[in-house]
Length: 71
Image (cartoon, rainbow, N blue to C red):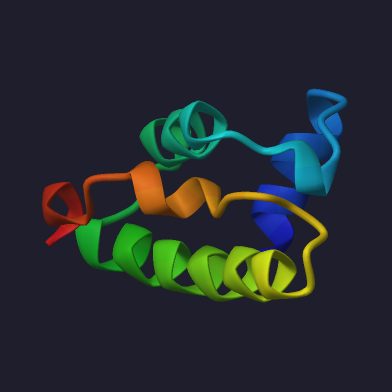
């Protein structure tokens, strides 16, 4: 999660203004195994799901990512 926040900060993107495309670009730039990327997706999904429930954001950007790509 920390690396993702640094990624966003370097690009001047607010944490709650993240789109599916931004997350996908992050995963593509992240040099790690698919298992590691899957775990990162799980953490980000939990974070954005919580923010959706609290109505800080309208839609979870992780829901648009094809998770099978990282299995």
